Length: 481
Ligand code: ARG
Image (cartoon, rainbow, N blue to C red; front, top):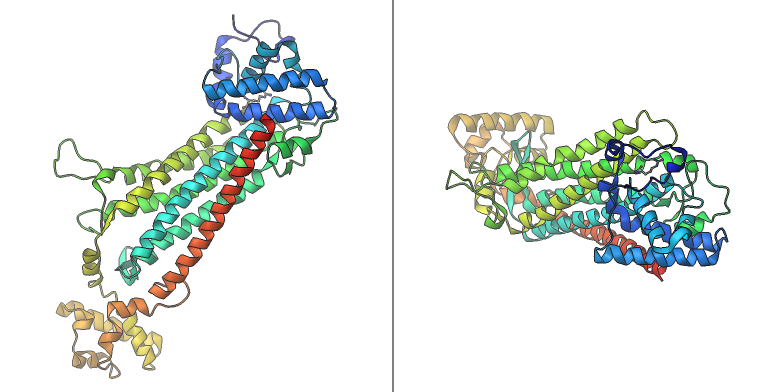
């Protein structure tokens, strides 16, 4: 015999098994069970303090909930799949443990505000884990940058040789992109960190509840402002889906680059054996499967964003059951993203950077052509004119199979009288890099500055994550006292 739903009074019979199967969210929301109990602990302590239920019932409920917490912790808590969701499971278990007093827990709340509260608490932790995984990768990029301040490779635009840059500059670019991703997650965290509990079904409640007390007990910055908004709103889910998508897109372009950088044609890097895979037929193969999977898993994360936008775009106020569908995709996206971030760190830190090959490639493609134009500018040639002169020199080199630095002074003079002996030093690759000294440029002095900024931003985020993790832990401990 299956147990009855919490709302069964109005119905003549139980629901069909197929209705339960189709509507149940237990498979997904069981992941929030700990937060569900925590929310209930905060709620019952508030009901007690506000004298909404008698002390002795409240105390029984608290003891029952604590037993449930230990059952969850030791793995003995049983999810009853004849019940429709995690909230129902916890309430039934409570009543099993303490009898009818368990039925007083739901005074002044609804599953609508409960689920919104649980999910925010679940996501707070998931976001902090994601930010830590991002920052671990940012830290990895900073370390590569520290080791390669003077390793030069071609910088590309349109996938064509453009100007020489350093490996430090290249990987710091990723450090800043991912740093912004982490910042975005923390911004969303702050906006999400308000407590919907007490909004009840949609209109608030007639009981003299203290929403500030429950919000504070659960580590939120304040109660949400409007009860109807509280139970209908899922923009925090959509926003996090965007944060995840943007991070996944950044990771995906990094992954794409690792794939072709490790090809025989590029050979800029070689991945460590530990982080590559082989072929069942071609014995020579060493494949960048991790990078390919990181790239391949991006689609599902972006899918979650589209899913959320479409799911909510036609919803009237307030709660609609459609909203139940928000959890699984975001939970899975954050988990998959965090796994990708986590595996990328050792892929990057253990790969070999092939300096000689990079250097060889820098020599080709007239990568110092801009610098030759800059040289002419110093000799008082207007930049536009200098650009034309160098263009002609490049064409001459192509026709004669030469590099710019291989031209003799006499040959140079055919293009401009102003070019002298000092040109060779000026257009040497090292000098090209060193001179890009502007803020954010590729010179070692500039990348050192960038590194300091990246490190201080990273440390500031680590402080926030530490603080927030500590706060949550303190809340849990106080509630369990
Ligand atoms: N399982 C539901 C969800 O995730 C809980 C809220 C149910 N509320 C309701 N009115 N049926 O959204």
